[in-house]
Image (cartoon, rainbow, N blue to C red; front, side, top):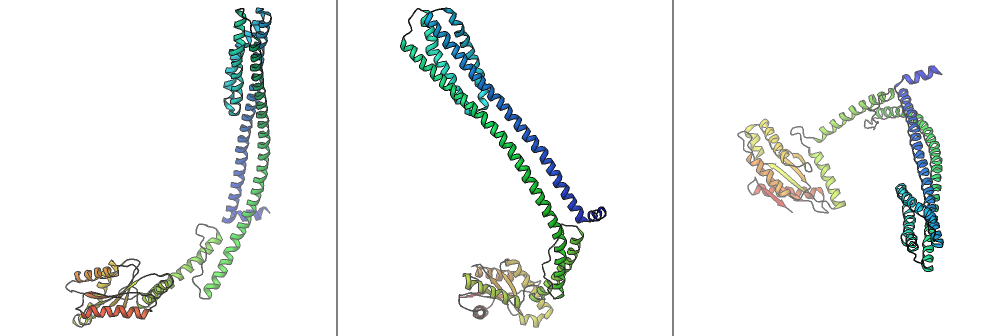
Length: 427
C-alpha cells in the first residue's frame, strides 16, 4: 500500500491532490482554532454582561432599600417628631444619590434598561424632592403635615415601587436572554462544526471524482480527437489545458497543438481562396457571399446598405502604353488608397480586372465615394495620373443581387459617359 501511495504522489496529479488535501486540513484546523477563540471570547463577554446585569439588579434593590430607609425615617419623624428617625432618612438620602450615579454608569451597555432604570431613579428623586424632604422640613418647623400630602406621598412612593419592579423584571429578562444566547451560540457552533465536517467530507469526495475526471476526460478527448482528425475534421474543439502541467494535460496539449496547426493551415488555405492574389484584398467570390449575407439580413431585419462599383479610367490604354507590370502597380496603388479610406464595417473587394466593389452599411455611400474619387485623383503614382469612375446604388427590399449590381453598373456607365472621374448615383 505504501509503495502504491508513493507512486501516486510522485506524479504531478497525485502531488496536486496531496497539496489540496493538506490545504483543506490546514484550513479546517485554522477554522477550529479561530472559531473556538471567537466563541470563547464571545461567551466570556456574555458572562461579563451577566455579572453586570446581576450587579445592576443588586444596585436596583439597594436603591429601593435606600429610598425605603428615607420613607421609614421620614414617616417615623412625622408621626413622633423624634429626631432619631432622621438618621435612617439622611443615610438613605446620601445612599440613594450615590447608588443612582453608579447605576446610570452601569446601564450604558444595555440600552433596553436605560429607560426603566432612569424612570425608577427619577421617580425616587421626585418622591424625595416633593414629599419626603418637604414633609421633613414642615415637621421641623412644627407645621402639621396634611393627610392629603401624606396620601400623595404614598402614591408617589408606590409609583417608585412599581417602576422598581419593572427594572427587576427587565434585568431578569436580560439575564434570561443572555443565558439563552450562550446556549444558542454553543448549539449553533456544534451544528456548524457538524455541517463543516460534512462539507469537507463531500469536498474530499468531489476532489477524488475531479481527479478521476481529469484522468478519464483527457483520454476520452484524445480518443475522440484522433477519430475526428482521422475522419478529416481538423476543427474538432479539443480543450486546452495549458494551465495544468500534469502528465495527461501535456498529452492533451500536444494533440491540441497539432489540431491548432492543422486548423491554421486550413484557415490559410480558405483565406487564399477568398483573397485576390495581386492586391491582397477580398476577391469576387468573397464579395458575392458577403452581398448575399447583407441581403438576407436586410430582408429579415430591414437593414440598409449600398453598393459602390469603381472602375479605373482608361485602364486598357494604360496597360497598352506602359505594360502589364505597370498596370499591376496601378491596381495595387488604387487598392491601397481605397483601403486606407474604407472602414472596418465596409467590404472592399476586387470585382474583376480594373474594377472594384465596396459594400457600405452606413448611409454615407455617396460622400465616401466622392472622398475615394478625390483621393485617387489627387495622389499620383510617381509620374502617372490615375483617375476612377464610381457608380452607386442602394439596396431596395425585394430585389435580388443581380438587380442591385445592374443598377450600380448603370450608374458607373453614366459616370463614364459624362466624362469619367466622377461619381454617379442611381436609386
